Length: 123
Image (cartoon, rainbow, N blue to C red; front, side):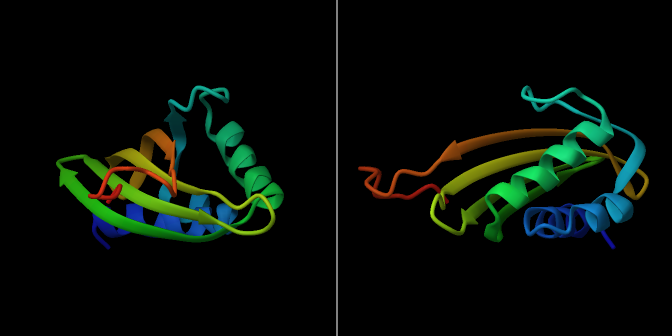
């Protein structure tokens, strides 16, 4: 599996509630991340992802673009929620790999405005 495929698989698994499987397959034990809302260790983000899915499950994660450069993979995804408080978000993830596993992650998200005046759309 390529790094590009691994990044996409991780997002689809974790984004649809299969967080344990996603971490087991793709995340290194020494993983760190840069999400400003949680401590930077592996378990803190894993727990937060699982809780977020329980509170507000995602209906789907559509990976729209993937760029790969050496040890880095960058994805642009459309995350669509479900339920009463469903949201639609554009998310950029930056993965840094060592071998076959992600060792570092950055993520940036933007809520999508259904009434946006931009005729080009977010993707």
